[in-house]
Image 1 (cartoon, rainbow, N blue to C red):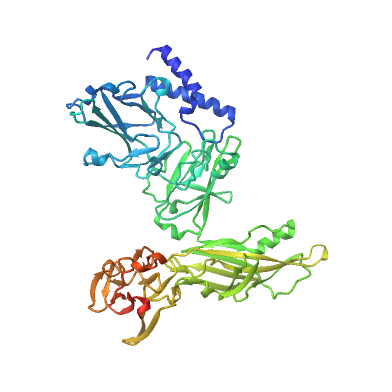
Image 2: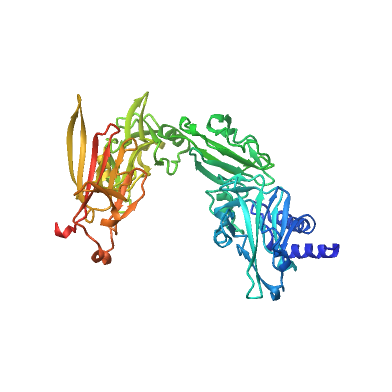
Amino acid sequence: MNPTSVRKVMLLAAASIGIFQKNIGMVYAEQGIKSLINGAIGTVSRYAFEAKKIEYNSEKDFDPEGEMEKTIELKPGDSLKYSCGKTGASSMGAFMLVPANPKTHILSPRGNDPIDVASNRVQISYNVYRSNRDIVVSTFQKLGLDHLLIDYSEDTVLMARDPEQFSINLLCTYVPSDVKAMPKHRWLQIKFKNVLPMAFGCGSAGFNMFKNATPIPLLATYDQLIEATKCKVDAEPGMVVGIYCAKSDHVYPEDCFRQVEEKEKVTTISGLRDISFPYYNLTGNIRVMKIGSSIQQFDKSFTCLCKNEQNQTTAVLKVRVKKTETCDYTKTLKVYAQTRKWPRNVCYKTLEQGKTIRIIVAKSDGLVNRSLAVGGLLIYPENTTAYNYMPMDKVTRLKETKISHVIGSTGLSISKREEKNNYIYDFTISSDAVVVLKQPIANLTYVYEYYSMFNAVLNKYKTLISIGIVPTDPYTHGCGAGGPDIFNLQGVNVENVHIKKGLSYYTQVKCTLNGWKSSPVGFYCPKDHVLEPEGCFNSAFLASTNRAVRLDFYAPQARVLNSPNLRIVDFTKPMFMKSRIKYSSESLECRCRRKDGALMASITVDLRDPRQI
């Protein structure tokens, strides 16, 4: 390409800037447009002079003696000019590219499969890899060219679900105009150096890169950009978290994630990281970290930031490792006394496996101390360990209800204790708990009463304490080895037998129900017990013969559902399908034993038509 042509291409690029990569970081309009134009001209310069070239534009490019498969590797700073067919070349045959749109879709590696099989493995690119900029630039046909540009510029951050195996694959197929001739193929695999694992996180740029990102439009509003710069990630073992800052920003602390900011203090968290993770020494504006298996030893959260040249915070990533979250009303009342403003949603929390919600209130007999400007009174219902409130009539009214009528669990504990001048309430769900919700709305809801004496006038107020419960499993009809509170016993016949073994007794639970009448059906066998048969409910023992059989042979309309702790089978059918149900005179059974062979629980599911019983 001669200098005049290059100049023409550059001018066209500047005029047609919409076909090039757009920076979605937070930049001011004038600065952003200048940067965009310079970037576009730079891209075309690199395209014209520096890019590697692979072309399949004529029949001779598909010579049988040539390479059917080719693999190349790009490092940051490299680019590739690729073409499959040329405008006006259809007279000698047709060219077809797979995927048809490499910007939005990606072809998986061929492996050892035939072309016709491998060519069908096309996925959405966003599900496989993400980047702070477009890797595949749109075809340059608007500039009089016939190429794709695979642009792996030096400032590209590339994340993939499988960074070790990631590649972009392009299949070019040539179909000769001679109908007797066979199609010819050329497969190109493009590998990349310095690919990072896909992470959870956020930053002041690259908003769509992270696993937890909600895609935002190219022309995002200010509010959309601000929302994308703040995120909270609940850490789990093996999780990769990351932060990415715009070019004009920097990561703070620079050492994040080896040191992090916690309440304005720089804290070392080496014990929280997986030290085998190979990506801790990254420079520039990207940091990633892998959460180690020792996370259960930690009970705190930490923060990493993006800051601009004026040291202003432009993005906040908070990684929550804390297992205990606290609502301290003694501190809230002190702030209220100074500001006379009560904070909104002061105690709206979410409780899940392995976490504790702690509520701290000052000791009180329910009487106002007129010597204090503000003070706390009581939490209602007063028996917090057994009762709570259920919202009624669209939350305009509260009804006192037993907690066991709202939530069923094997590992939820609620305790109250005195500590100096305070009462401390702990709501805890153990890490191995089974939790089900018995009502559509199943928060733990309480009311805390407090007062003020501003200007010597007594005013009493109430504030809501709301603890949302995250269930582990659905609410089902059935039984199991322990945890009777987690089942709906309506329509279930339960028999508890106390059996002596040695000097001690244990309880054997047996239950029977009709699957077509009481559904879904659940069975609980703890993970340290032995389930029989292992594939319950996909297979079960036939009650009449004690032989293991497949469920679908006796109840083909029933569906086995996945659940973390329960074995579940659903017999529910719409009314219009009731006449098609295949009933059986048989019953199916599953069992749960201790490791020593003792039978702890069994469930028998009757498959007869409920109308015939």
